Image 1 (tube, helix red, strand yellow):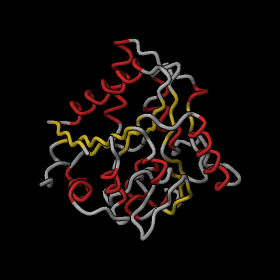
Image 2 (image 1 turned 120 degrees about the vertical axis):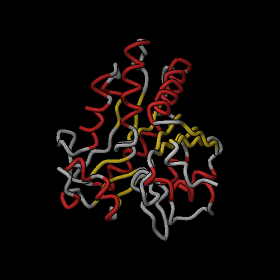
Image 3 (image 1 turned 30 degrees about the horizontal axis):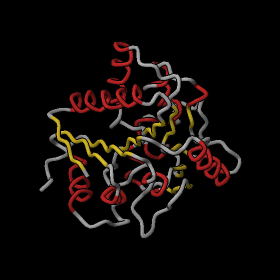
Amino acid sequence: MIVQRFDHEDALAAALASRLVDAIVRNPRLVLGLPTGRTPLPLYRALRALTARALVDWSGVRTFNLDEFAGLGGDDPGSYRAFMQDALFDHIPLDPANIEMLDGRAPDLAAECLRYEAAIAAAGGIDIQILGIGANGHIGFNEPAGELHAHTHVATLQRATLEANAMLFGGDPDRVPKCAMSMGMGTILSARQIVMIALGEEKSDCVAGMVNDLISTRLPASFLQVHPHATVMLDHAAASKLI
């Protein structure tokens, strides 16, 4: 695991955006795994700016998002599809046909999870998976538990996760859907490269555990220790408790 520290979030975002654009130039058919939430917003701003300056060709790039709320369709303002459209997709020349998202309104959520796994496999797998980390150590919606799902699945969200997503629902965690679909740990770890972003002091405890402690299902992010090509990108606050 490579740990990189940055003076501030904009420096981190600029470095990662440059890395991703370089990867697209080398492989125009790159497959990207993308997260939502507050953490990747600086990255998405940097990607938008760099794409505008460098005229990056996104036409062959495919994207798979980590998760989506159960019960919400792409036209719902609280959905992760709506979040991604506003934060990134509406601002870069990405072919809409190459955007893969879980359908929260699918009549059979278990079947939708299987469809998503098949779509990832058909794309040849994910080349670079970008991750954030929850304050409780979750990645995607793989919450701390006695056991973790390997593949895309329906997850019940913990209170800390509901509170972290309240910004999408008028600041009220009780309005956040209680279940979501998420890539599983095996799906995430199958990516050829993984880049984890963490920002802010509130992430410092779980970052320290992820890097320094034993691997545990109670800290899902700790499984990144076994990945052969994982990079952790931190601002000073998130890195403040590392040994």
